[in-house]
Length: 179
Image 1 (cartoon, rainbow, N blue to C red):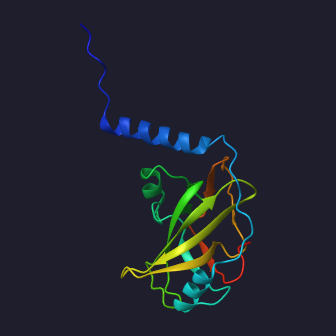
Image 2 (cartoon, rainbow, N blue to C red):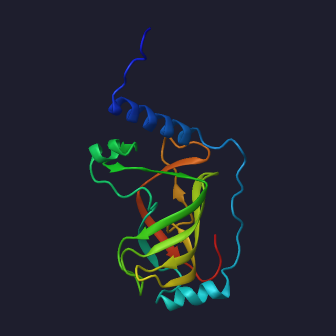
Image 3 (tube, one colour):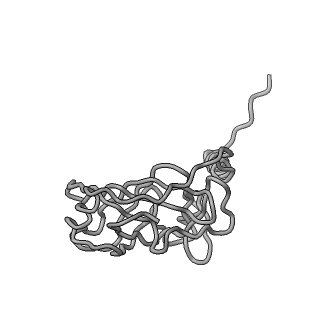
């Protein structure tokens, strides 16, 4: 009786990582809806002011808290991510998004979290955050747009439903209307 071939843990891990990356890059074939322009709620405008910010205030963020900022090609490769132009890229899919504020801004200390939603269809990646949570647990309803110009540029290799973006970017606090 023949026994099944034995595969090393390293080989099996690489196969699993490659399969997960391939599935993410294939994306979702269903049509995703981009958000419409709408006004920020009064509670969100109040929340922006409570954290000491004004319309147009911009924070530096780590785009996806689940994909930390990695500084070396080896760390990036070990995490199953793409290293390009000196940085480890972030792969975003449609749905919930949690980002980390990288530098103190207003009354939001470094490490504060922004919670919202991201859409990857279209020419740019659109993200809207509706809640901010400080490291001490204090939360505020907010109105924040991912990036400083209405959306993140998709990098080469992006697919429908799976956009490659830079790991750090901006988030803009707004008090009027989402773009």
